[in-house]
Length: 192
Figure: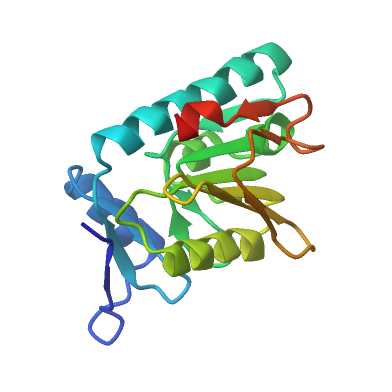
């Protein structure tokens, strides 16, 4: 099953509160919104992708509990990005000072902030072109570091603010660089 994009803009343009309410009223459906205001209905992940997503999120949580540098978010968290998108990365992380600068109400709804780091783990049904466009939206919104992992091809695309993307074929690990200091992801948990 692939994501479905629906354009209601000629009928109604949902404001942020209406989009939030639509998501609350339909908790069994995962919605995102692109920079054009189009709704994207995201399919649920399959078992293998869900299992790997859980393992990935756990690795980030372990690292973050040791460093206490920020906050880790799972794939259910939707962010209101500065460029107008509403997106839910598979894993994301925000530096603690930036997170704490948000009001309690902003943190409770869809936080109006671009994460410092995002990770997208492609499902077998995901379109590479669409996922690359999503990664570019993240970078345009101010994300500092992003990883697009395609387990089917064992390929990783690394997105860095102000730099061309880097493509790695079958890497064994990824470094969090200066964004996630000391974090190293062993990719055997993704490839295996």
